[in-house]
Image 1 (cartoon, rainbow, N blue to C red):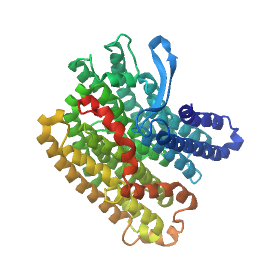
Image 2 (cartoon, helix red, strand yellow):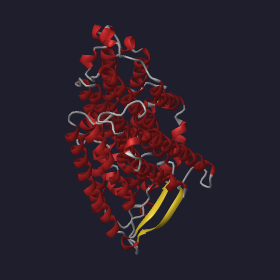
Image 3 (cartoon, rainbow, N blue to C red):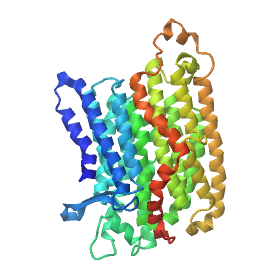
Length: 513
């Protein structure tokens, strides 16, 4: 009951906001803030209950399983474990902080009622994806996020917003078709007496009864959808456009949560249900991941727009996440989940800062800004520098652990991948080179934007509007800034949640719990 209340509370909030009269449109802001605060508090209650309840920090908790569509055997089956819990809490944290930031600014054409209703609807879709344990229910929540994000980009986005919104929608919808076909194939080919969409039952079956050829094809169909959402190279091309044109809050939620839905899907569905397919495709995923790391870094070096640079950095960072998953080891998948959380915190914060910089300078062009943010807005510049350094993976900050353990896992992948040991170790070296490129483009960006002497146009009378960090911005940003350093020094706060359940799901590959 509690988990369902937490998931559908934002949907109720969206309904309340929609019913507000137009004359009281600004009331949507405190309503959205109240709903998001309650949702975040409930997610923390679930986090505490996971450790204090019967599961004692491992296994599935807060399960509910009732008939939903009996005609097709679909159930409303939800629950949460150490794999989904960190992502679930992250989604509520970022939505809460976006609600705070919304008091500061909502991009043109304004309309806070519609914008905040869409944001809360998006939150229900994101959170539902992380707790769904039925394939049809998962698909419904997965598709639910398309509509609000499409309108957030298409209405409140930049000059090319219609193009970016349609591209985002079509890419994701294209992948979803293959995922749905694969889900139906799993159902109709289930080796038991009663076909099922239940993820827990399918994972417990561990691929038994499915032929190797079937698993390879089904993994391809499911993996294509997840790869597009992640986004993996070469399916990433929708991301830079979507990020560049999306409003600030849309970019924060897109980078912080939506991308994780794809990588989470690999861990929750593709690997445990189709283990032979996973072993077959893992080397391909590993190669694509490292290409993404190198390619994303090189693209960042070529960018002149701050927001587009950060968008391409996500391609590289999610490459490390997928490299960890492709090793099929507890170390790699733990690193992948940590990388998802760290990326959500750091890149979400980067998009917040860039959005505020754009509000003040009215441009995101690196050349037009011309440097000197540390001079004109010292606190804003310091925050920007801190978060950029966290994103390049400096030890002691959250960005470090996911990347280094993903590379470590590539040095010694799963026994089933022994024939590809040389390949994985080569990829590890190339991935390590990618970290050097990452440091290069972030330091290059900071040199050109934050440091040096500010142009006279920003320090003279034309720069009178360059106010430093506001109170509302501090309120929205402080939790992220604190968590970035806390997880950097205390990574066990995430690894301690994920490890038991990650090890358990990998038992299907013959290593036991």
